[in-house]
Image 1 (tube, rainbow, N blue to C red):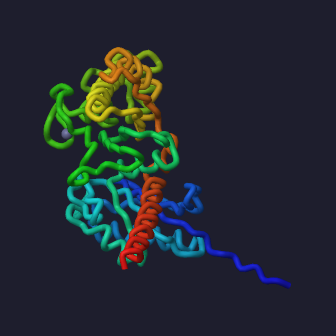
Image 2 (tube, protein in one colour):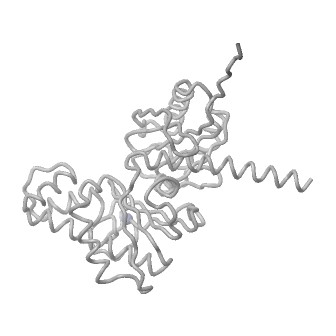
Image 3 (cartoon, rainbow, N blue to C red):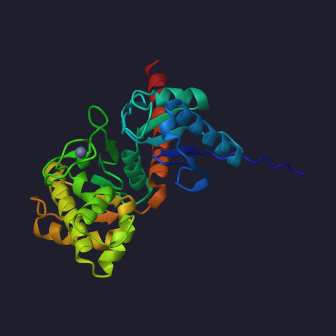
Length: 324
Ligand SMILES: [Zn+2]
């Protein structure tokens, strides 16, 4: 009787390292998720603790799939130097994170190639490979969560800029005079983030006992004019930011993700209306699309970047062989 030998699956691991939780997936080349695990992020315990956590989730997935991954990709909070995987800057909620050599340390720990990107860049990489940005030539991603994250990609490749901070539109001025989480004021984030929507609702005299953007959206749907106004303000600010970016780099698409998407019915129509009346100078419309990958976008994007890393490495090896 012939014996059948089962080839171990080829897969990569994508890790989404967020402020409160670390989600990791094992994914094949088509973006099919083979296994997944989510654990709390020990953000207050320092870089070594977060590295340990990532090592543990990689081990769990390795055991779950029954073979080792070909590479690991990470989408991590903070500004990341994509060439080294080092954390250049991070918010205060991450202790001992700034300066941490995440790429090098994780590669040593896992024994596989590792690529590290900023989490919003990873979100966009996921939408480019498997979601709402597929086929787009010039795209802006906006992640509307606690803050406003941004990312850019051209010809299917993430544009990181000189220091890994390209696309960080949340901290551009010109949106009023309210305080921003970064310490400055009048930034897009001070009007359009989930945190800002909540703060502005309470400051304007909002009375509903709401604890989240979803709660304020519920109030707006029920006819609360203050709730409706804070979403309209957020949409107007987003439209201004999108038109500015479209005029700068001739966008064909914007993909929007993050927790605020739960209130998309309160923001989307205002945004479409504002874009219709003050569209980009090109005269071509910019498609605005909500994320298609939802909570898996950054992990899938980290996986897509890991596949790219493998293919670039193989390409470089071929070049070396030809050269010798
Ligand atoms: Zn700011």
